[in-house]
Length: 384
Ligand SMILES: *Cc1c(COP(=O)(O)O)cnc(C)c1O
Image 1 (cartoon, rainbow, N blue to C red):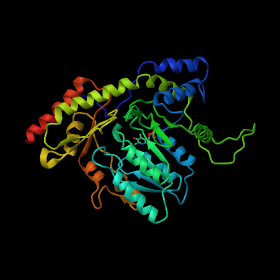
Image 2 (image 1 turned 90 degrees about the horizontal axis):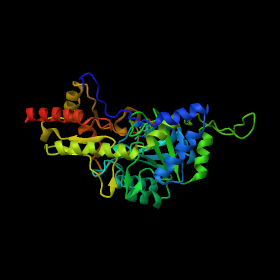
Image 3 (image 1 turned 45 degrees about the vertical axis):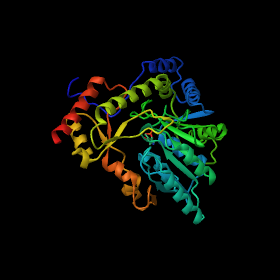
Image 4 (image 1 turned 120 degrees about the horizontal axis):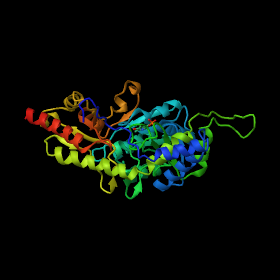
């Protein structure tokens, strides 16, 4: 491969079948808005995940927003949310005028800390102000500790929204990631494990709620020839062309999971012996789709830090990135309440300081991956 061909963290990887579905839409002149591909994609996505239904929309962010609307979250309400995530998990809480409370990660999954969530609930309960929902994120494909987290939320009677934008195709105890809460959401953004060029989905076993989400995402039009409106709606629905891409992508999702897991295994085999290199663990009884291979680098042991790795690869036109900057460290959430894993000891701060994501696309060639591995190894050896 030419040096000037950039290697991305995660780039679109088409199956070849997408165009068949798009062609069908063209042949039927079913370009917009809804149509056979939207219906088909919803059915196939629900079947894949073994849930009652799915509603496809134009982004994962929109799906989270709809879930919050369906749970009637508004001004004065609080919503607990994982702090170590992409901002799209939390922005919709702000759209609804509600107040987020941020929860730290724990070491075994890098996802929501059970003990931090317990502390947050117990304090909220004492203050007589329980959250109206909890948003649990599954980072880089790894499922959170759903049993423990769900049982706390259930004991307080608070619904869960599972942000499975990064974990489509992953499993927790034999069940598909994204199917544990009242609502789950997926993203088909360009960098995700499968993509529609942009899109998302809301999944649930509550068929009525999904119907309501379809209503809200098409401008909340009450049935009347002149369009009657009694509540605020959005223009969030996925188009029939975009859904065609999704159907072609869903056919190869399991292949994509296998490919990304192989990429993780290759990095792990080559680099995990280096002192100070620690890969994101996979919790027992879970299967991560390994959307991105993520690891932490302890500079005191490795003699090199994660920023050096990112720069080293950047100089070779290879994209690597730090682990998400936690929301509680973002200026936007400077005054937001935060519950660390241990009092005075924040796990996600450490993951951000030392964490790096390596190129992990299912279309990354073995040759390119080996080049990345050689570059990293050579730098570590030079330092040692
Ligand atoms: C990508 C992503 C989203 C939102 O997805 P969009 O489709 O880009 O709106 C939400 N949460 C997480 C954790 C994500 O990684």
